[in-house]
Image (cartoon, rainbow, N blue to C red):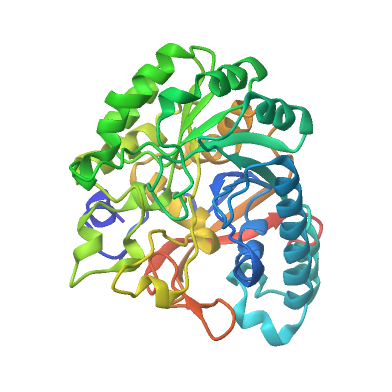
Length: 404
């Protein structure tokens, strides 16, 4: 698959001649440094897909109500673990195997082993920054051993961001305390002014907010999340101080044409929105650069199909079940499969002060079709990113005693 096919806005095509000679790749178990798991029934239907592919995940706090205190984060982590245990128990039944990720369609012994290993998945909790967050809240978070970062949503920027920050400049004492306590700030980098074109919101945010924020708090650990533009990649490359960025699979593989090909395609709609091809190329260059400032963050954001195929479609792409296959496709298109492991499993852990996972996973060069839809509870379904298309890589799962 060449980069034109990946980036031109067309659905992914069945692979032709391989871009590399690799038929199987191994890498440390990756982590997802930007993940939406939702809550309730939705949580129970999506958490296993991430737990089978990732060792840890930074979990977004934009629930209703948002996760703004440590006790809320602790309760949410408990619900995530309970939902994972319930999903694993359900997946042990052969009756449900066809509804589970393809990695579980294997021998019963291996499936049981993979499910037990999935229970080791570690949700890393975050707090939702608001106009009412205090320095004492930051101290409590830093002392909790539970909260790993604080998320900045400009008010109204995306799903459940109505409680977000209205004016970043008023949060000086809070950001100063975060800097002092070395608690990362995760930034959804878009302005929300009605007169700013939606495709320019990220670039304007850099000029109006992020450059000043970086200068005012030089030691604050900042993650510019799900970057989408050439300007964002350049800002992160050149920024002084501890600055990093996550990049999603959709922004590596697609430009904005994907949203409009053959009609309006809501399952390619996310925020920040897909941009022009020049920006996709800049993001791909950043991702495969080998610079530790750039690492994996899926921003996998599940919504029921009925809420995506809607007059006011929800923003978000659900990529969790086949995230690594998508990233491998993008890296191979750039001739950089050898750099996927650091991007997916090393650089993010290093930024957060954690050791990379010691367990390892493998992927096989084998055409695999992305499901057209997946169960999402109560008669609902969810349509994953690239539904019905073929990827040249298939995730095999963990390597271990039960492999093969």
